[in-house]
Length: 184
Image (cartoon, rainbow, N blue to C red; front, side, top):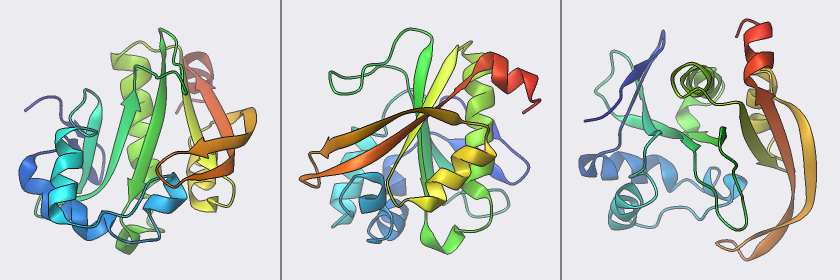
């Protein structure tokens, strides 16, 4: 089944085909995907395809509440290999996450992100982790601030192919030494 991570309130585990209905329930909400740069899911079949492709990678986890029914309420992951548009060097990763709307405002994304930083710096021995948010995504900005990320750069015109639009993107970073120094 792969690596399973735990925090005080959460279990982070690999995605499974059987999670498709739960993924669709939360990822179909129009308040989630577009803020992060992707389209809302339109069917359980589409969600299953996302699980089999995008989520079927090392270091991508379903966020589940402890004591719940093991239902994913969001997703979090470290991208270890970049693309032409988003190059990632050896020893670096990019953190991405989202949580279903009914769970907003509970600190779940921050708690999951802190565990992913621990995973990245302690277990995977990464040097730096980047995290981005688009202009106006105040919730994601706040998660990054809570986790100790600091400003790295601004991409004034990031093209989002899935949405066919250009947005201002804020890129933040945290290094292993900063993470250790602040006792996160």
